[in-house]
Image (cartoon, rainbow, N blue to C red; front, side, top):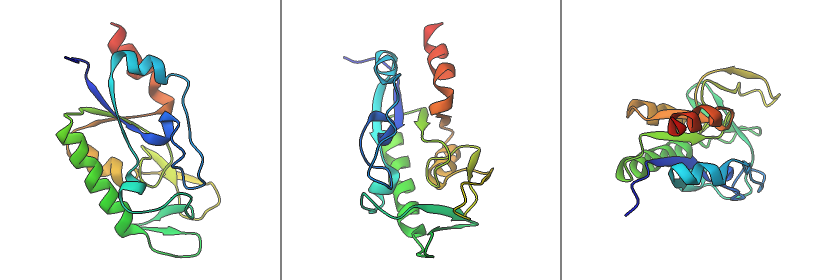
Length: 151
């Protein structure tokens, strides 16, 4: 029986090509994370019904839109809800998610101008996970996440 704690993780960080541009964001520390955690990969955007590749989207207030103005808020919210359901069912108390994303971004996200400008804020999935008291990390916090387990 596996007694490792479960870690919700963005599929793109696991090497799954589910980014908006059909690429991934594979992290080198994946094998090390797998030693300490049972990984639960998710892509909220795909879960919400968006295909890969897809037009890039950014948060614009409470809406999430593509550069041409297409509103994809419904798909992002659906993906966030399904991700929260998976996290709860799998008993994930923490999540490692992709920084800056309109879905998975934590503390800093793109500002909606499609100029790669960052602003303070969270992606919609992160907001939903935080409401369930799930701790959030990004790929920039992997050392912190691993340090907890190495004590």
